[in-house]
Length: 323
Image (tube, rainbow, N blue to C red):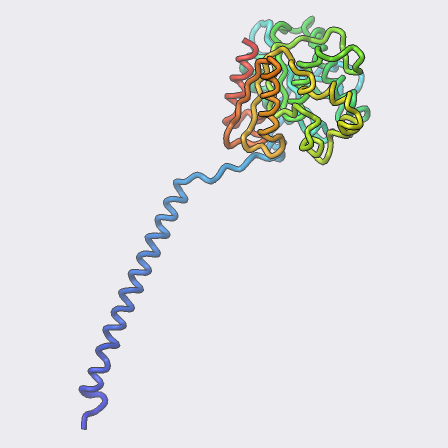
């Protein structure tokens, strides 16, 4: 009688041993393959840059404000003042009228654009950065927001009596809501005499740099921007106060008869690229010299922060208009 542990048992054990070895080999191969895949994934992740994320308003406001050389009032209201920065040298210096954005709202003042003004001053330009009454301030909105910007710009004539400023080389530059006002300042010589925004002898400027500026207040997308601030700014929508939009919206005042450079982030979620393209096309069709610079991997705020890769385009635009 053959014992179950004898020949029969040996015959039964051999397949189990071979199966165990096959399992061990497959397990090792699986582990090795998984390790290789994980290693390659880590290498690719390390060497592939993360998708760029647009800067936010918090990033903009996190910039430390920079001091001005002079803070000067241009009117009687506490918000009618500007910051003057002067470059080195005897001058006379070309001037950039700088206008901050912030949805035309009282929550956002001129401090957040001070780093850009300082950077431009270091390039050799005097900068006159304007504060103005905004929606939420006493007297803000139509028409005073516009009139403040105009009065502040014209006050350069007074400043030039004291400081070495070249009034033959003045441009406007603004971001977002300030880009709207920068374009409007360059356009106000086109206003009819009956307009409440009319000035008999507005300061002439050589050009405009609009950084993600709102050029057409009547667009439906801008009627809803910043919680519906444009109807608050204008005192109604385009069907209710059409004459205000005709006098306050830069696209309605074309041709401006001066060069304009629009700098726009391709990924701007606030001021759409399509709206900038539409204004650019309208300006060119009107006969104006207009250029649109689209910056890839940029949103709404990169164009106004001087430490980003957008700044060289801003500098180039200023030099092109002033020289």
